[in-house]
Length: 283
Image (tube, rainbow, N blue to C red; front, side, top):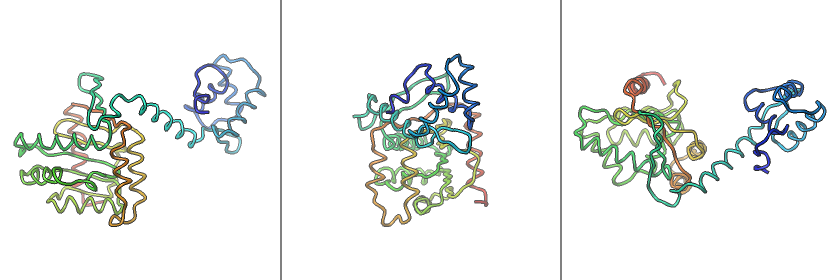
């Protein structure tokens, strides 16, 4: 079913999907006019029957006399593509490995086998700051919906954060969420001596970012982080939560990608925003 809905070509069905993918909602007459402009032959009655069939099969929703793509259908397409990418991922059977894809002189994509492997990478980055005698550096700047890592931190990762604090290397962490898990994360960092952490923030940055030294990392939209946020949104009691579900998501070999930008002006811009958010008395 998914393959037939995504097939290439200039048939009416594909053209309707392309049109409603960029412009919506539209009436049947408006859809027909745009299909005709694309050079397809056929009658209004034939196009109308096609649109009604797409409504019946869940590709399109109808509200009043106007149509738009079904959000559930869009998510199913995303899941299908994610599964295909996972099956063709050359690193899906490796516990920890990342690949660099250079886009421009100062931008590249880092691809990790899982979210967990990215946290291993960030822990190594923290150690590098310590080794460079980081009193002249701030630590890692975070801005996220939820920050799942501290729920699973133990041993080496906790020691690294404590050592950063001993070396007066500050973390600035802003978390949009204000759920029980976010309060747990706040208390966790506070117990390690970090007082530059704030939850329940209201900000204008919609994407998740991390800044390490003069490198900006931006989470690329993907199913793994959606799964993490949805999972943590449903937790009402951290004490009784089943960590196995979170561990499964964090270790799942379905790829995790981060856009890395080495641009000092951009880094300074985002650093200031996060510092202002954390140090502000407002929530």
